[in-house]
Length: 82
Image (tube, rainbow, N blue to C red; front, side, top):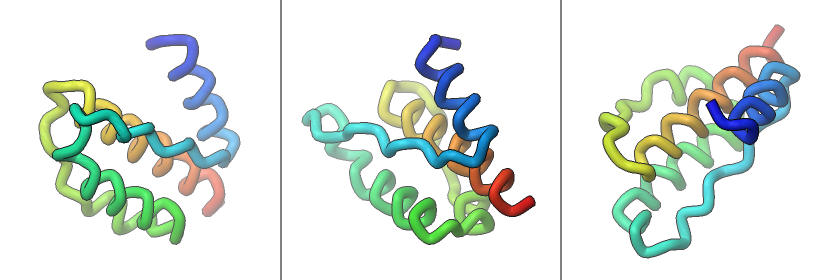
């Protein structure tokens, strides 16, 4: 786990929502709608919605970033719910 990911996880464990990944590069274009859907769920604090999202296998950087963002957001929202 990278230092940046460790810091993001520590922040999420304090209830701080992660920043959405930057998907402006053309390589991320096929995944932008998925990211937009996740961002909407995170912004509304919809933990059940995030848990219900069917994620694609993380075989490339885009899906890996989506998984990381969703998982960190769910961690932060669970902390906030306590």
